[in-house]
Image (cartoon, rainbow, N blue to C red; front, side, top):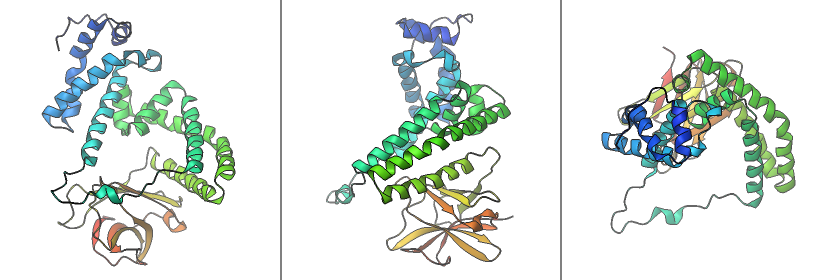
Length: 337
């Protein structure tokens, strides 16, 4: 892309305003200022060719969507970094989910996929839930809303949020923490409307869903606590893919614990993955789970035993249906040093 001479007196926000007004030449200075930064971010996760293509996609999006940039919500740089991060994540996710081509004569596995789309009652409940969450997010002050969006909607770490917003790490954490507190205050009185919708359109089954949602909200509070360091489970043997891992999040005094996995292979036929924690010599099950096509899974457990920090955490292969105690092969593991 041909670049225009850069006038340092013209700000990024000025250029975006001009671009939104139809002055296409304003894209050149923006490209000159930030193309190398976008490329350096992309090439850390993608190969060089894909990173170069992503740079073009990012600036094409900026060109077409300049009117969506609102300087009142924050400066251009963090907006650009958020867009770049989203593009990179989207590319990585699409690669993970891209199905391998079928060999000649192979049966199409989609023929046996069960339709898991929600029925009309559950759809109404979900719609009400999404409306409530959206209204709570929109009620946040701009700085907190921007930090929350980067941390949880764009899946950035606190350090990445601080870099994107060009603020100290402590400031980023404070904005995230205060934003979460405001969200909780907004969502608490609204929970009654969700329960009312559940009773009206779905009866007992959807009330059960609401109870699960309450538990998941406690899990969200747990995993978004700024000072919580997860326990990382790594492959327990050479037969487990090197990139496979899990993170366990729990806190003393909290009955809820969360375990997430990445890059796990599908369990062999007749087997299932099961997560465990050990306190002294006593093992407790967090539950069984089936990872998705990309190896990702999340297990949320609620048990009084989890209020104490574990001495060990494992993921094992157990017979279908699970076991009362870990007896199968250990796949991922963490233990106290």
